Amino acid sequence: MSSDKKRITIFGGTGNQGGSVAYSLLQNLDFRVRVITRNPQSDASRKLAAQGAEIVQGNGFSSEEMLSAFSDSWGAFININSDDKGAKALATGDGPTEFDMGKVIVDAAAQAGVKHLVFSSGPPCTEMTEGKVRMKAMDMKCKTEQYAKTLDSLETFVPIGAGWFLENFLGKEVAPVFGGFPHFLDDEGYLTFRVPYWGGDEHVPWLSISDDFGDIVQGIFLDPGRWNGRFVQGVSDICSFEQMVADFAAVTGKKTRFQPILPSWEAFDTHGIHELQDVKLMFGFTQLTGGRYFGPEPTERATARQLKQLTASKLGRPQDQRDLISARDWFTARFAN
Image (cartoon, rainbow, N blue to C red; front, side, top):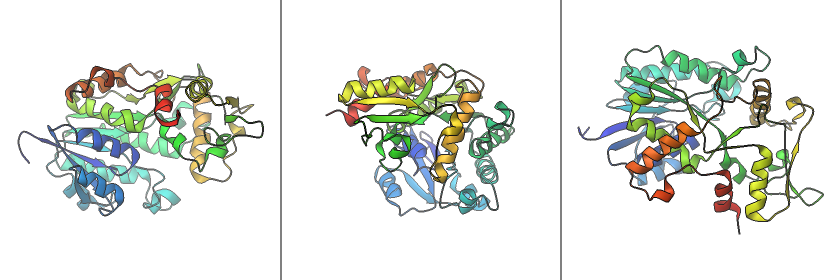
């Protein structure tokens, strides 16, 4: 590896989070980007390769493959997709757990000489709710985070959490489960968003994966020692469901409303969709913790904003492109006529 370029290797680089990180880092000539994937021939892999990423094949349960994949890497970003259909043990719950995979990956990164690790983590759900809500994916990520903190060979370790993806609103498949918003009118002619209340002050953390997440992570890599040991909240905007819906209505002119599901999160119907079970539990978690989705600390976006601005400045972007995107501007860019 050229001495003037630092290689950052991404596990999960063809997914939403990892892809955002890869595309952000590829804009910075100080970094080389390597992406680990099970399928180097996938469309996502090919697109990253076309942008200059090095694509390597690797299975997260294989210590040998992971050690090779992380070789000669200065930094690493790791995100494990708990619902990954390709990792059958994670999707079905049979055999090894997400923590088992996380331990293999983190150990390999450390043994390969990675000095700076950013890990996509989650809050200690079971602990914070005193056992009332158990989000397995979040607990496994948190357990992996705690393990990674014990590895002395890492110079810095920064856990990061991702807020509610605004990009979820682009998909039409599950929109009816949430009342139809923002794609399907209800019987009264409204685009209705139906979910339980968030909890606490209703400070919902929204995140644009495509606009902000990768830049936030790059900001950490620009000065990893500064953020060492801090849990970074991946947030673009903070606003209630009611305000989010009002912003959508303001930029589209469409009849839109928020209808809270009452009396509690337990009334949310997942319609038998496996992936939505964690969404239901998420509402239980946030209601029981007073809206604190990322852990004991209150939701905030100042840190994410600072990291975004560091990246934007480094990449020489114009002043009007250096801030986090708001939910209102995100809807304007994608739904306004």
